[in-house]
Amino acid sequence: MELNEEQIHRYSRHLILADVGIEGQQKILEAKVLVIGAGGLGSPILYYLAAAGVGTIGIVDGDVVDMTNLQRQIVHFTSDIDRTKVQSAKEKINLLNPDVQVHIREERVEADNALEIISGYDFIVDGTDNFAAKYLINDACIITKKPYSHAGILRFNGQTMTVLPGESACLRCIFPEPPPPDAVPTCSQAGVLGVLAGVLGTLQATETLKYILGKGDLLANRLQTFDALKMEFRNLKIKKRVECPVCGESPQITSLIDYEQTVCDLKL
Amino acid sequence: MRLTINGKEETVSDVVNIADLLKIRGIETPEMVSVELNSEILNRVDFETTQLKENDQIEFLFFMGGGQTRG
Image (tube, each protein chain N blue to C red):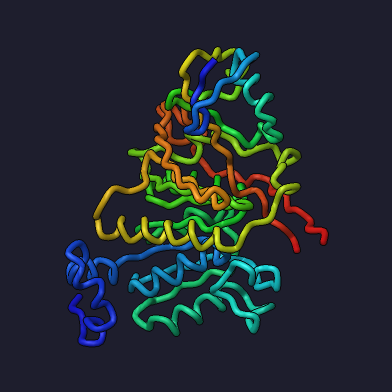
């Protein structure tokens, strides 16, 4: 794909980077990335991938924009309340960069649609906010050998890692099973400082672009943690486990599972 | 006993195994924690039988992503 005059202008700060250049920008323009969740993490991921010129961006989300989302989900505006998140996000991306083809799916990722939803994409980004979806995305990506970026945020903390199926540790290597639904203790401690979504989502977008470019060292076999109160980043070495239930030597999990998701009632 | 916990050196007493350590650290939600001992993730069922020794390096890894709220 030849860059036109406008694209040479738009992406000039990429083109002058030795590790991107015209060839790298062409890779970005040809890349197909799926972002699951157009919320807190999804917002900066979508903005930066769109601005960078990722040629095809898929967005999956079954929710509508709610007033309580606006504190951190910066792709949505006050005037978007009650609109679907996928429509709202698509509109912003189109305004930001007409080079990007946006494919939207207004639905939740579930065991019976996950494999089909992720097919056709080069890289998957998990921007969801619940463990049921996170395990589903992990397992679907491992089963179909799709690289993906995981992240989670809670209160003043966040963490992320990049999973290269077959090569690096996956979510289940660290957390083999989701916590029992009656345990979900995070409900009593829920809440998140809005900018955490910005910090972690931006790291996920960075990893996505590095993967597309084939440059640098991905956050594979490493868990990057961030503590905003201490303003501390830590990078923990993680190993792929031979006994991992989904990516180990004799996996017990070979098909997708819908876990029950506890939703906290927010009492104000 | 001197241990490195989440990257910081600490001296702890009355601690024999991983389960003890979770208790004295006051971790309210052990279901949400994985423990890495000297770079190896432990099986949850081994928390009580895994003995700690001088200079062990322990990381508590918290699962994040269960705090979805309904406004």
